[in-house]
Amino acid sequence: MPPEMANNDAAGAEAAVRYFVALADYALATGDVSQWAAVTDDDCVFCQSIEESAQEISSQGWARSGGGLDIESVDAIESTEIEGLYFVDVSVAEAAHDYVSPKGDVVESVGASSGMVSFGVQHEDGTWLLIVAGETANTGEES
Image 1 (cartoon, rainbow, N blue to C red):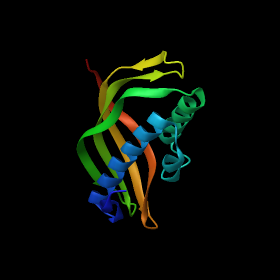
Image 2: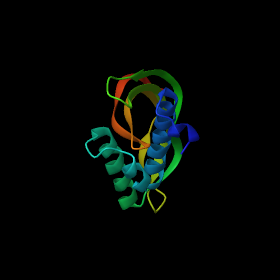
Image 3: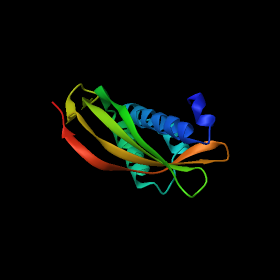
Image 4: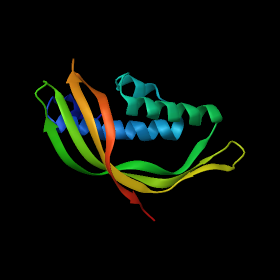
């Protein structure tokens, strides 16, 4: 975890979102959701979809070839009336990648894309929790 995540402020919220995107990427690449599950709210639909996708990848024995998630920019950080709750809007890019079966066959190809994602994160009891996330606008497929 980045040291800035110790802060209960906008810088801490941004660091938390950057960390959560890296964790989502790790979970989708490896199928290991233990760290992801530890920092996401059970009621977060987006969070559960990442976990389910990662578990499916793992149960099938697939491996990811290429790809990955990257934050291109942080566009807004908004504090709310609720103490420690921030909404962070980021532009996230997903590089093209394939999922490959244990036999080496490509079972799914995912094209490059980017879009705006809004993350709701809350600092509570000295740690950050991802409580909600969702795509706000899609800039479309890239070539």
